[in-house]
Image (cartoon, rainbow, N blue to C red; front, side, top):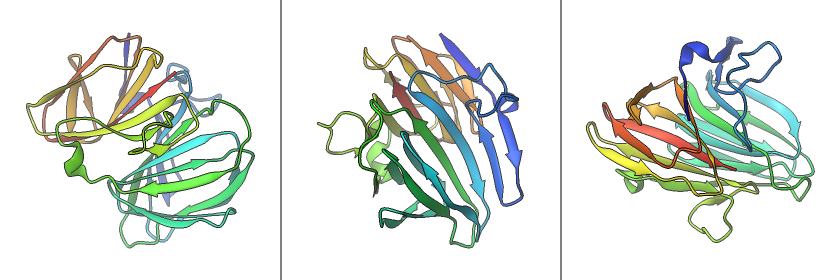
Length: 233
């Protein structure tokens, strides 16, 4: 089953410094059609103004993956981590038993990112944070894992969830096929750039598409495109 979530159907907000679209419902007043997909419960498309950001706040029992689309995000947390993640790269935070952190745009240009929240396999655990570079050339024409709940995948950032986060870039009129793992029956995909066809349905920047129990996804770039895809139990 496929469900196109066009940008017009997404909940959104504008605080001035923050412009956000929510691919998944985040409040009782939101669009009930855009519910969670198994372990995947949040996918926010945020634009953060220069010199602003999220002040210190707390999380627990959540796996948070941030994909930076434009600019750079500066992270600082109560575990002593301090880091900067730039466009094309990824950071992950396992909130575990509890952690407080801040996320800021210290640069002069707007920061654009996808923030993806996944339920962990089990509650608690020691909080952790990590970041890694993922050159776009390495994912030209094929998907690579950016974050994974499979501890055997040393190339991806570790998350404590039954899920994996993948990314790819495609030149116009090229195609790739994605076959979800048998135990990860929920898939969500959103372009970071350009427009694509997913099993014949057009998905452009600002949109997303959910797939449940689809045996394969045939993804074709209408124009040069970049996209992020999550498989979740």
